[in-house]
Structure formats: structure tokens, C-alpha cells
Length: 367
Ligand code: NAD
Image 1 (spheres, rainbow, N blue to C red):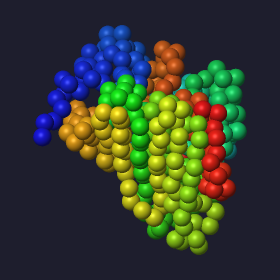
Image 2 (image 1 turned 180 degrees about the horizontal axis):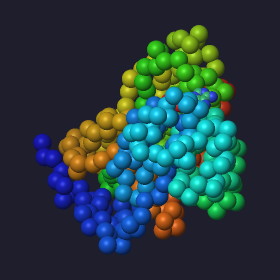
Image 3 (image 1 turned 30 degrees about the horizontal axis):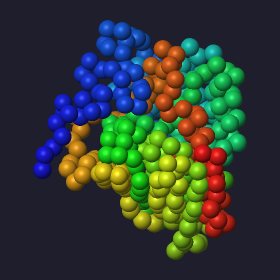
């Protein structure tokens, strides 16, 4: 089987060594013009994602670096201080967090808290005059997303949602193949992301913290995959839910299938679950098919086009690309790709999916 060459990949995606414009529209300036500054980031919430993904990814960033932390667990402070060389003045807890307003070391606050806390901390960070990266899902309701966008606009700060895949080469290529109609118009997208969470017991299983079940947590990636491969917004959704452990999943869905209809006539079928294992994106266009498997987790690979494997150049962590892109957006005052509007649109669709799940009816969206 013929592997796609690095040169082919670069030519097709618009990525090049001199760096230019990624197919997402992210513009990376040539070395000589790049800012020689690193913005300071403070991580809020030192849980699994901040500890094992964001902080390590920041070590490789060119345009930003970890300068502060906000934590409610004092026992974590010593380790973080030593590992990332943080000064005492840049350590906050949830009570004194607002004092970060006067801290010149911190330009960007990164919210990695349980979903229900995203709105409050994004708004507090914006009011403190800091640019904000907020983890996905942006909030637990579309109404909260709107408040967050308004707070950032009022404060004159930029907002990015932690959609790492918006900056990941495999996904940029899927988006290019789909939106560019390289194999004709896309007809069907199928996507799934599930993991077995039966042994877990944390905020993810409580509706008041999570806002929902696996759709809020991981299914959101499938929803986005369909949106950016089509390059259209869904106009209607249907959904079906199944439960085999009602005592564990009392207030949230356990397994969910949902379908989205797109204005060009195409459709997607996606699934997400806390009791299964799945991770793929499959796209069927008029004249060809392409996809990724695994697609959305931390081990993205297995790209193919018409049964031929797609090879991608060596890459760093997508979180590094995501945070560097945001730091450049701030320094160059350019639009954010993974914007608050993207996060809001996902929440609008998620609310429609939950309504369809609860009523068994097709729910129409503004499109
Ligand atoms: P986690 O449970 O590992 O960490 C949550 C952190 O919040 C902990 O440090 C905890 O102490 C703190 N916290 C503060 N107040 C809390 C409260 N009242 N209840 C519970 N915890 C509280 O979770 P995580 O996996 O790090 O997820 C954090 C956020 O990051 C979530 O919004 C999640 O969706 C998102 N996330 C994103 C990705 C991604 O790929 N973009 C991956 C994992 C998680």
C-alpha cells in the first residue's frame, strides 16, 4: 500500500516548513516575524487534564508558558512549584483568584474545572482583564455560553474553547477533504467516541457538575467532527438512548445515538457511551471515502482515503498547537479559530439532542 508522502501531505494541507496558512485558516508567521515573547498562562483546576496534558504541552509551547496555578488543594502546590518553577506570587486558590487581575505575569487564564464551573470562572477571569481558554464543553447551557461571550467582549479579552482537535493535522485534513469536496459532496458522516467508565466515580456522573453524560464529555467531539467535515450547521436532530446500568447513570445518559441532518441533504449518525469502547470518524462522499480510527482520543491515527493509508508528519501534542495559536491570536489580535461562538453552537445542538432524546421527536435547529 502506498503511504502518502510528507511532500504530498504538505501540498494538500497547506502546512509547510516555512509555515504559512493552515487549512483551518490559522496563520503562522515565518520565523523572522514571530513575536519573541511568551505570554504567561495560569491553569485553574489541577485535575487529570491539567496535570497530564496541559502542563506537559505547555513545556513545548513557543508563545506561552505556565506561570501560575489556581487550586483548592494546598497539598498540590509544592510539586507544581518545583516542577514548573512557579513563584509564590503566582499561586492562587478559588477564594483569592480574583486578585490575579493585578498580576502582570499572567496574560491568559486556562479553566480546566468541572463543566458546571466553566461559566463562573471564565466570567471572573474576563473581569480580571485576562484572556481566557475554557475547556470543553464550554458550559452546561447555551445561555451560560452567551453570558461568557458577553463578559469577554465587555472586558475586551479573547476567548478560546479547549478544542484541541481544531489544531490537529489529521482533523485539519478531514476538514479539508470534506469542505473542499475533494471526493465530491459529503453524504454521510459516522462517528463514535465512548469509553468504559463503570469503575469511575466523580463529578462526570452528577448532572449538576457535568450538565449531562458522555455527550457533554466526549460525544461533543463527534458532533464537531460532523460539523467541520460538512462545513455546514445541522438543521434537525433525532436521538435514541439506552441504559443497562440505571443505578449508576441515574441522571445522565449512558449510551446515546443521534442523527443530524445538514442543509445540503447529507446526514450524520453518531454515538457516545460510558459503557462501550469506540473511537472513529468515517466519511462517505459522493466519489470516495475517508476517515480516522482512532479519531478523537489522545492516540489519533489510522487515517485513510479510499482504503489507502494517510501518513502524517511527526507532530507534537495538539494542546501545544492549540495554546500557541491562542497566544498568537492575543499578540497579533487575530480571530480565534476555536471561538466562543463555536462552543455556543455546540451547546445549542447538544440541547436540541437532549430534547430529541427526551421527547423521541425530531428537533429542528435554526441552521
Ligand atoms: P478532573 O476531575 O481530573 O479534575 C477536575 C479538577 O477540578 C480537580 O483538580 C478538582 O480538584 C477541581 N475541582 C474544583 N472544584 C471542584 C468541585 N466542586 N468538584 C470537583 N472537582 C473540583 O477532571 P478533568 O478530566 O481534568 O476535566 C476537567 C475539564 O477538562 C472538564 O471540563 C473536561 O471536560 C475537560 N477535559 C478536556 C479534555 C480535552 O481533550 N480537551 C480532556 C479531559 C478533560
